[in-house]
Image 1 (cartoon, rainbow, N blue to C red):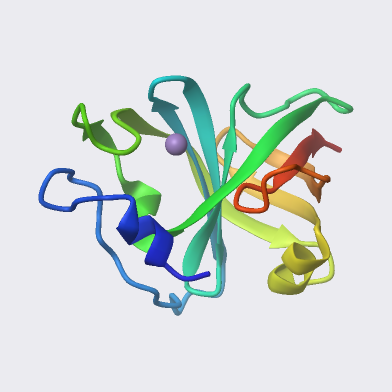
Image 2 (image 1 turned 135 degrees about the horizontal axis):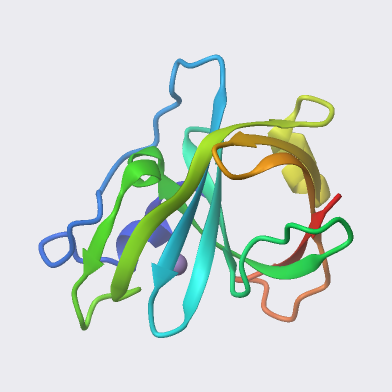
Length: 157
Ligand code: MN
């Protein structure tokens, strides 16, 4: 998907969010980040490094922590890698206006070792190694009515 949608939604002279670019990091580990985003509706943005960008989901009710818990996760536009440590206030009138803070970050692995393939297949069995989040979660794509915003379920497994 790249960053076309990300850039279309934002005016970088009016927000401190990074413009960024697509660039694979040369790190043996893949990054994940969960950002608490107090926008018009509070939600948590879950991002997984893949293909030089951060694949992103908005999780309105936050991360499930009890085994068997499941939460709606709405796939949103890819974000640049630089977004992974962004914290700040997106000014009123801008896309996503509100406060962004990093809630947790760390590394992740996908069962099978092929995150892009798992993404396209619509099922990621994730191992997260963060400061707060440690363990296994599963992301599964569900039907979803809007092809621009596919719906997934994020489950503690
Ligand atoms: Mn958000």
